[in-house]
Length: 293
Figure 1 (cartoon, rainbow, N blue to C red):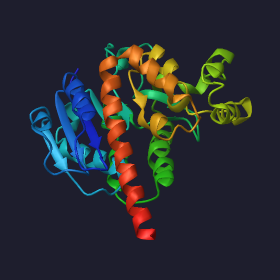
Figure 2 (cartoon, rainbow, N blue to C red):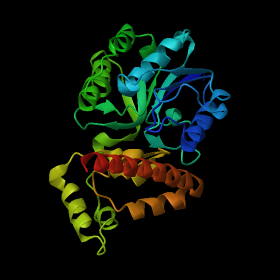
Figure 3 (cartoon, rainbow, N blue to C red):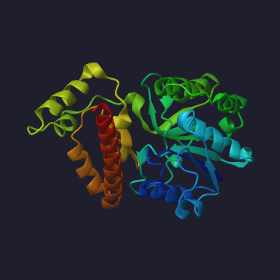
Figure 4 (cartoon, rainbow, N blue to C red):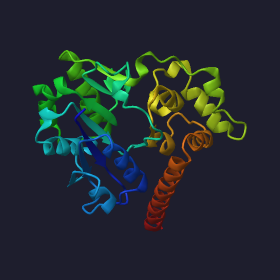
């Protein structure tokens, strides 16, 4: 399998975090050609420069789709690849060793696949790990899509136009989509899954969690709620947003305990990164308070 990987990087402190280096090292084992695109640093550490085939610094315009566009344009022999993989640093992992997910029964015949296929908003492959195969790589509409990427816009609009819009365009053109975890047919959270995140010590958060995961709030984003279901399906990642924003009000102590059981090494990397982000937020809040005072 001749495979290219395009990794999109952004960091609030302008550094390449150890978890990113760990991820890039894992992708190196899968890629014949690895492109690292950063909107945060023009001088990455040697671990990155010695690992990737191409490093591209760029301005932070167009979010990750702008970075993937730069990586796409840097692959001059795109037609020679069996798969072109678009990934970013919005997830932690790979948390555990798995066979190449594209060889799974769910994905083996798909033209465009990813770790999660969902029908939130509309049927689409979540863009944090998406893979194009030859029929899509050679499709003129796919090249047209990347040519159209570039303008800055609100994040929600970028998701609607690019993440969801690309999948919709491919389906309308007759291509098949797939996900290692197919979130289109997921049932509601089980009683056990819900009670795992209800604790007497956090009554306010627990009530919020029960409200946010009630059947009336369905459909849910599986990558932000069903993290253990994804692991069981063979998705070796966890979304950073789950830990940083926690939109479903999960018990994060339980999540971190599950991560520790799964991979102590990755749990340490995650805690190190989260501590740095928290320090960054405190500095910003301190600066704002000082300005107000």
